[in-house]
Image 1 (spheres, one colour):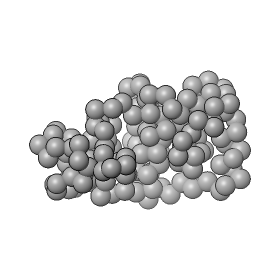
Image 2: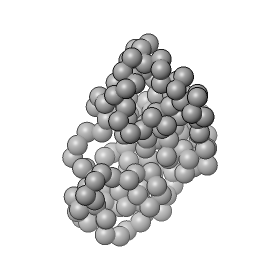
Image 3: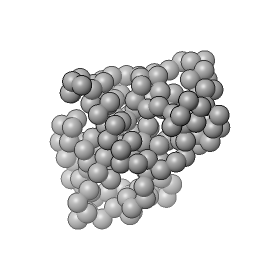
Length: 149
């Protein structure tokens, strides 16, 4: 949840204070404005049945997807052609475990936002650690020229 709040703040987005469309985000939660703002900006979509699951640790797949959407929102459109997507993902033995974000993960790999956990394992279904999240946030901010390394 803190990544989402940091991303919204780092992009300088004006908070959207509205009742969340997510049934599991209470309007008085500390992160409610960040969730509403990120949703309005297209950075997050949530899950089925209007759920956001704020208490569940995000996966590397979800992390990559959020960062790629945030980059697109910031005007750094990062698209990958289908044949390039296949090439990028085929380097990893576990690429078949990517459930829904093949395009986003390929774009994140292509722009060096994410790496595999080793040379041939991506672990897209693994939980994103704080260290991975901080690294990706730093790479994101550097890529959109909000910071310099």
